[in-house]
Image (cartoon, rainbow, N blue to C red; front, side):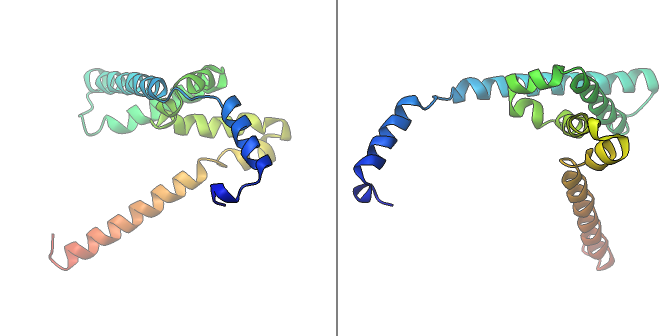
Length: 156
């Protein structure tokens, strides 16, 4: 609906809405997300170096246990309610790294634990993260299929 077609009540409502609308501190939110996401990545890098120096992993092979450790830590922090407060402060800075995946899995499980372990926790644990897992597996399959065909045809 164009501005000229709005009724006086609609125009009055828009003015009232603009008066009470909260102004979002976009720049501050971006800085917080960048800071917290960076700190999470620094912690992940420290864990990776830990596996390299103390368990004789290479830089390539240290990735899997590092990811598993980061997901595990985020699950523990979510269980104690710490990661939720971090998410409220940092927004996407805590959701985008792999720790956000662990948070999503455990949050759904905690939310439905009163319904029992099988139907509650088991049935809902992958409610949010299930689509991520399916998309990841399907994408990997498609990429391997493309690579296999290109190798068979001698292109790579």
